[in-house]
Every structure is written in structure tokens, then in C-alpha cells.
Image (tube, rainbow, N blue to C red; front, side, top):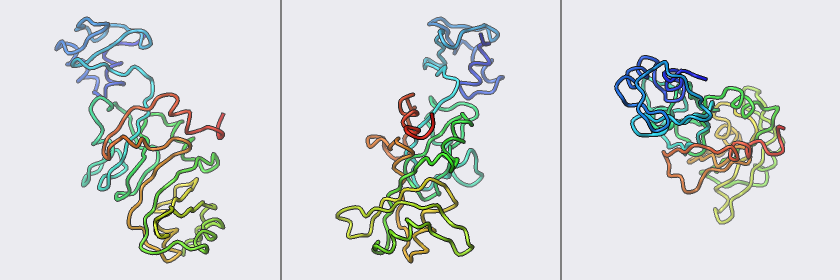
Length: 240
């Protein structure tokens, strides 16, 4: 059992004081009836809670797919730019959300946002070999030598060596667009890997994490809650 104000605070993205104000103001309902008692006990698994007429998600953790636009930073807060948390729709916001990994400011595509630290660690740890795939459009042509160097593991000028990566040429792209597969997340990694090969990335989009692919019907800048099947798909064949 859990207090109504605590439930609303942890699931709805409000401070405890804001939650209590909403409850006392008649904005919160439990099982279809308005409740103005902040200390009211409820069972999150069986009781339905609404706030402002919208259902409050009762799940302990939430997993969100964001089709990240360019110009937005992968952070929880920033003094200069809009963050991926800022652009989430109100119904998906709650306390403790953070991006599980990051995409560069000018990179688009799949970014998972959650409040589950253990889940994020499983995705990000290189030892779990969770593959991330990107579509990279370049200012030049991908050659067989480029592909070979990616397979061997690119070495940056400072001596940092990347793990072996996959690189496929997108058919019909005149060899200027490739699909990159990596299982680590070094700073600006994909751009730096191509730079070592004398190529500049002019557009970059992440299309998948594990076996979870970006929803082709999800517009850039939009987000949706992932199902348990979506989350499980990330780890198929990797973590049991």
C-alpha cells in the first residue's frame, strides 16, 4: 500500500507539495471518485488514479522511446539548450527520468528515456554487447578499406581503440551512406571513426538499440511509452 500523495509524486512528476495541492484541490481521482485526502492509502497494482482527468501510470519504472530531433541535448537539464526531458509530453513525465545513454546534439533518432538505473546500466555496459545501429550520411564514398578498418577496430589519434564495428553500404546511396553497428558509446564515436578514415558525417540517425528499432510512424520530436515486449526485445540473445 502507498500514500496517494507519494504515489502521485513518484509517478506523476510532481513534488510532494504539488501533489498534495492537486489532491486537496479536487484534481485527483481514485477508482473514478475524487479524493481530497493526501494520506489515502492505495494499491498501485489494483487502484486506478487520475490527475486532471488523465490516468497516472502506476508502473514502478517507465521506459520511453523518443525520436530525438537535432538541436536537443541528451541531458536531464541544461542552462542553454532544450533537453530530451524538456520535450517529453506531460503524460510521460515523472521524477527521476534520464536518457539511457546519449546522442550528440545534432544527431537524431532512437533514444530511450527511463527512471530505471539497472536497466540503463545493462544497455550501456560494453560487456553486454548491446548493439546500436546508426545510419550515417557522409561527404565521400565508403570503400572496402573503410569497412575493413571498422571491422578491425578504429584507433583514434590519442591512442583510444574502438571495439570492432560493422559497416554496411546502403544500396543506391552511391557509397555515401552506411549503416554502422557498434556496442559501445564513446564520445562522438561514430563521427570520429569516420574522421580517421577521412570522411565527414553530414547526418547521423540512430535506428536501433539491441533488437528494438525506431518506430517508423513516430515523428521526429515525439515520444511513446514502451511495452514490456519492446523492452525485452532490446536484450534478446544477450541477457537472461
